[in-house]
Image (cartoon, rainbow, N blue to C red):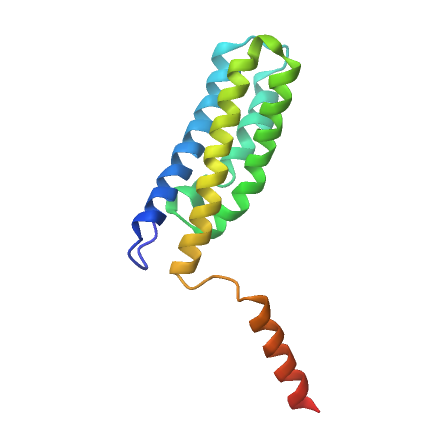
Amino acid sequence: MMKDEAMQPRTSFYRALSLLGYLGLLSWMCIWYFILVDTEYSMAFIAMVYILPLLFPMIGILKGKPYTHAWSCFIVLLYLMHGITAWYSIPEQWLYACIEIILSVIMFTGCSMYARLRGQELGHSLPKLKQVMDEEKQRFESKS
């Protein structure tokens, strides 16, 4: 966790939610493909396709970096799509897919809200469009 500033309780809640979703999804994908089902794919292929993408943001998520939480939302969308696809295309694994969908939604919600709230706490939030437009207008008018 970052030690720059104290974290607000709401931010801590979403941090915990993102960790729950992330670690749950990482564990669930390992359990699903290495223990629960027999697949015709090799273990190396399964590890590269289903596990490796989740390992990319691991350090940043565990350290509580808002930027990593933000871009990990793009990665988790792959798992959401996979879960939805598996849910309707593999009827005998619908429960496994539902668990993946739930964990993906938990991770997405936790990561996106944590990135937003923690970024604001640290002063990394994006300025409002109106403010940017006013600054551009002032800069343009000062040159003429």
